[in-house]
Length: 228
Ligand SMILES: *Cc1c(COP(=O)(O)O)cnc(C)c1O
Image 1: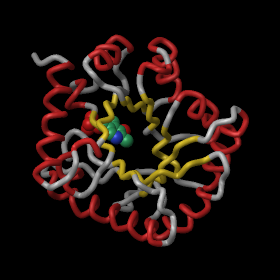
Image 2: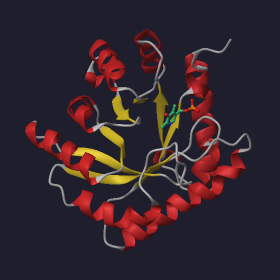
Image 3: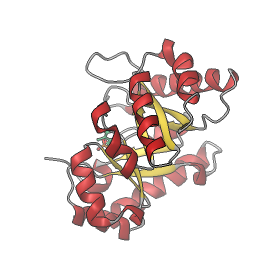
């Protein structure tokens, strides 16, 4: 059996190799270890093994773990669906929120961030394959939402996030990653130069995502093993 340390080392190696092969600086890619449904002991193991960025999907579960491990033990990314009534916790505990997809949610995050004097880093989530079962804004609304989000004083819109359908052949996800990169290009051309991040790529397809410009890969299974 491989350890979490072995897995992290292997994923980092693949990130480096993929980046260099397509002429990118490996340092421009952040590895986010996705620790949903994994207990604090496992997460601590990942931190000791050099995981400096961690991603969580469920607020209550995440708050418990972050309280146990300490907020400064890692850079915390919220990557699950966020309801407005939980925004307060997301703002208090997370450095980045990847899943902002409506003005209503952005407004509530801004309000909660203002209360504690924080500028919250957020990403705009796009439902890139228009799947009914997934959250995310439509690609057509991306520019207007990006403008609105950028207008909030206590938000810093830093990029875009997507989660394409699962394909056993990761090559099939490439078109969606490419599409997110194109939307980013359009938004930046419209004057929102701060949109530097593309949060895309998971265990099965992070290499393809890196080739298409990902700056944040969210890797769970390949680091922590399967989830029951
Ligand atoms: C669970 C999850 C991941 C990690 O998925 P793996 O296939 O286990 O790497 C990445 N992003 C989001 C949004 C997730 O919910």
